[in-house]
Image 1 (cartoon, rainbow, N blue to C red):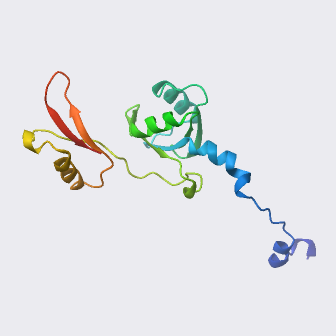
Image 2 (cartoon, one colour):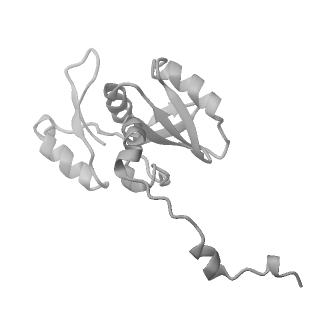
Image 3 (cartoon, rainbow, N blue to C red):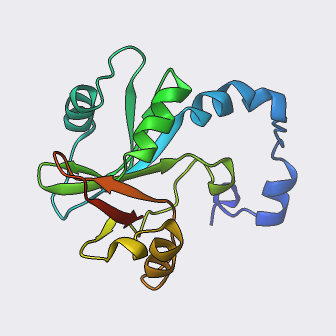
Length: 169
């Protein structure tokens, strides 16, 4: 038997060079990622990066600096030039796309470049038909908590009517 192919794994590791990467080495990349969102399309059908980029460039009215990267099956990372776009688009989530839901959330460094799988979607629930005295944020909060965790709560104005409807997300 040829000794060149018989390696002792411990000695192989002794000969490997360890490369140290400091915080300042990745600060530029981290700054770019802070202005990004991780998103998942909830669909069995697969969507390509080019489909997502072209569709959401139009939907979100973004062209300058807008980029999309594939992160897994129907999981994408969306990059923006402006923090205001990140905030606006995250607050508008979930988004309807070709009758499928896209949910986006802010990239987090602790999640190893945002590769965590998005498994839940926040939705707005409207509470209709409440008597006027029950149309308060406190009542909406209690009703919303009975359904799960609350991200936001507010009033929904029906166009052309004086009716207020409580909604919770």
